[in-house]
Image 1 (tube, one colour):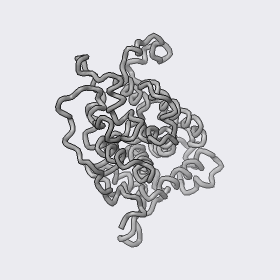
Image 2 (cartoon, rainbow, N blue to C red):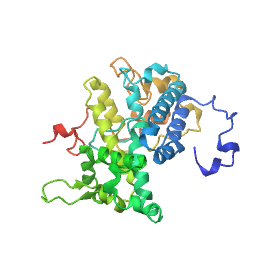
Image 3 (cartoon, rainbow, N blue to C red):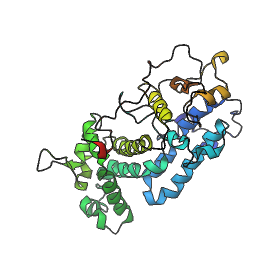
Length: 328
């Protein structure tokens, strides 16, 4: 997992005899979430390599994570196939918490799709290292003018130009200007328009000015919001499941996810967790099943939910999160 505390282990790997079988499903899922987070070595590889070189591997990694979740909660891996009507696979890759209290882009397991994030990760890595690379006298001539990257003989520089165009041509890229925590990277990658009423103009020539501004977080957010909107606007997503996902993604949903209760009497059994936790639920909610509870992400019996009372229906998408076709 790349953490310093385990690097003393042989080959930087966890020991094969690590006693995990005794852990229940509520304990195993947070371990998978942690191992698949952007802090791990998998993300490091996508930052270093062109997206075309990591396409197949990232697909395989996403499949492996889905299979690991299925085995952890003792559910058939077929339930996590992308075409399964439960949308279980799609919900794995949705963020845990929605972006705002009124948005509909959370409610998932918080396991990002490596395939979806590989392009923002690669571009962000190049942006962050570009100022240092240009100090090299042998590289500086090829890197000094990013506007020439698209026609460069270097496949890496061409990949940078392609990634920049792909991300900045997405309408959700301009939504970063409305997000106070991401507006600085948006301004760094865009020029002022001639008409103040028009959005700013993306400019690859400004790559040098965007370093050290958490570019990957901002650029990945563009792909996350597009992905979430595609899921929530899918007409095949059952209304009751959509409402439960909105409830599960309310602000603060991820605070208690890594709690491991020491009192065994408070722990949910694997059966209770699979039946009542939205994160691993593979059947759309119905009136004949126990109510899905967002706070059961913790795998604990909590007498007072750590989240406030939840609204029964999804709130309208704010303009900056709504699909471009639905904006006034």
